[in-house]
Image 1 (cartoon, helix red, strand yellow):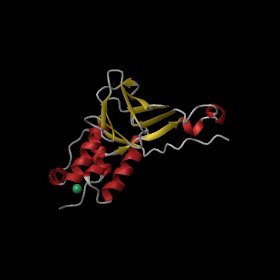
Image 2 (tube, rainbow, N blue to C red; image 1 turned 180 degrees about the vertical axis):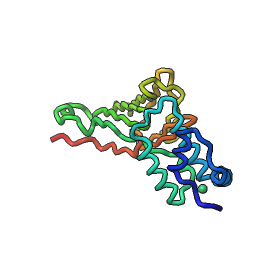
Image 3 (cartoon, rainbow, N blue to C red; image 1 turned 60 degrees about the horizontal axis):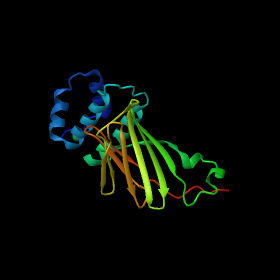
Image 4 (cartoon, protein in one colour; image 1 turned 60 degrees about the vertical axis):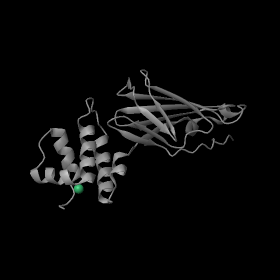
Length: 193
Ligand SMILES: [Zn+2]
């Protein structure tokens, strides 16, 4: 088997929609790792609303490091959403005082043009969670959330709701083109001073 494809070259080809060299195409046909990488790169490069401002460099770097580490395709397919906001990281101690039990929490992740917002409320019956997926600012329906054995899809408003005894430690979010991992999350409440 020839050398693996260079992610940067695949990226350039996908963006310019140019044909791949014959040798590259032959390698892709026989290498699951590289063909997975190629389909991932295509889905990013050809995204209709590709603002992709900070995506290419960081993401390609990640792809390079993964591909260089004898990855399995599953790892390649899982991209990690970046946590952009966590109310527990910014909440003022005074807000927490007097609330029974752990406070509710809000988290926001971003991955490319997706934004995923999670609100988790602790009630006596357990945790009520509401998540919303926006794609370039618009509600994204049909996105599957997996939390343990739970599977919920977003509705037309991009909303997915579920309840569980414990708050989610890890959330998988996916549609046909994308698979993201959110977390792992720690649910130790912030200490009030
Ligand atoms: Zn390869």
